[in-house]
Amino acid sequence: MMAAGLAAAALFGFGVLRWYDRRGLHRIPAETTPDKTAVPA
Image (cartoon, rainbow, N blue to C red):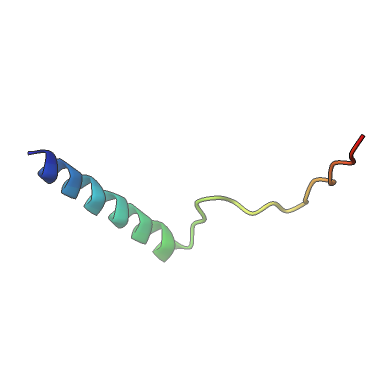
């Protein structure tokens, strides 16, 4: 039963991943304006 749940979760995860990639959505949005680098004290 545990293996069936793991397989179902993996199929669902890969399905959502494929759906995101096909729609052109980004899982982590890119920064438009990068922050200034930290200056050491």
